[in-house]
Amino acid sequence: MNSTLATNGRNGHTTHLPFGEKRDGPLFNQHILSVKQFDQNDLDQIFVVADEMRLMVQRVGSFDLLKGKVLAVLFYEPSTRTSSSFIAAIQRLGGSIIPINEVKYSSVAKGESLPDTIRTLEAYADVIVLRHPETGAAALAATYAHKPIINAGDGVGEHPTQALLDLFTILEERGKIAGSTVTMLGDLKYGRTVHSLARLLARYDVKLNYVSPEALRMPAELVDELNAHGVKQHQAHSLDEVLGETDVLYVTRVQKERFANLDDYEAVKGSYVITPEIMARARADMILMHPLPRVGEISQAVDDDPRAAYFRQVEYGMYVRMALLAMVLGKA
Ligand code: CP
Image 1 (cartoon, rainbow, N blue to C red):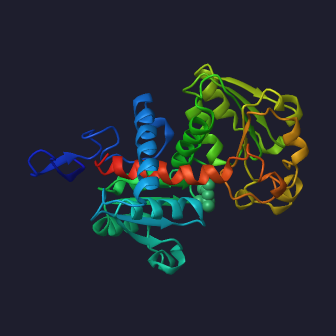
Image 2: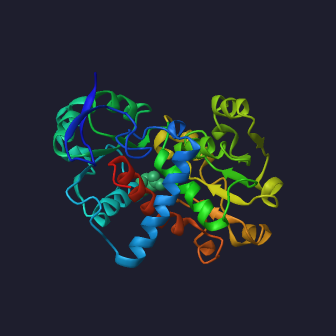
Image 3: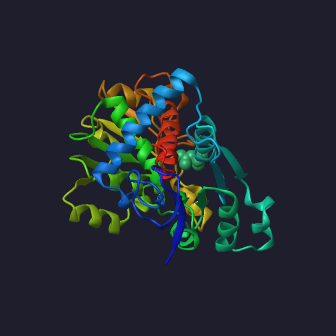
């Protein structure tokens, strides 16, 4: 049986735990692969701990909750926020990192396989954060790993920690999720953040509006999956059609790197831009979110609008990732 070593907090003895067994909190020793794995109790606890992390950072900056713990950051695709926020998170908790932010300078460039890379890094680290261009790569890595794997984005599949921070942002900014109308605008086909976020929002009483170029619509399988859970979904013809009822406007960029044909990308890029004129027609209490990076879909002229939440969203991400690391490592 796949097993891992764990320390019993009461007597300090080292014991063998079946890997994935729940002990010392809901996420202890768990992989974070998909938002599908979370139950409501998990979500509630993550947000409580993230709030505690925010208070602690505001009070003391950093503290030694994860002193001695090592995080391997293994990214096969570019990243600013996810990689940096995980690094900041473990450092603010007193831990340290193995940074492989650019695999071309690692033995991956010599042809080393993902399983061998994971088996190597887990010899040094307590937890591994993985971003990979192939859907299912994090789940594959998890089948070889004896330490927790955290999915930091797998192709067009999922980005579960982004969805958690997105949900936390809505909670912090609006005080509640239930009853909200969330409009997703942009590349809903390839945008993994919207796939994960839609699945998480489906657990609450929300309405989801989809606005996108025809070629970039929300995948039919995901729409069917959410329909089966009774989620209210609406494919809108334009943003204007749904702007007035929107509580949360979640914008994504067109994912250029996912297009097989650049002409197809050129045909849809720049087809939507949030401007001050659009914000003037939106609700006074709406929030505007974006996972970032943006490449023109939100005008910089909107940045000073208090409803523009995307840079606050970045900060919330660090608190959520601090919470996840603490919980996965049994210290929350
Ligand atoms: N939101 C997000 O995943 O950003 P990065 O690609 O910069 O990590």
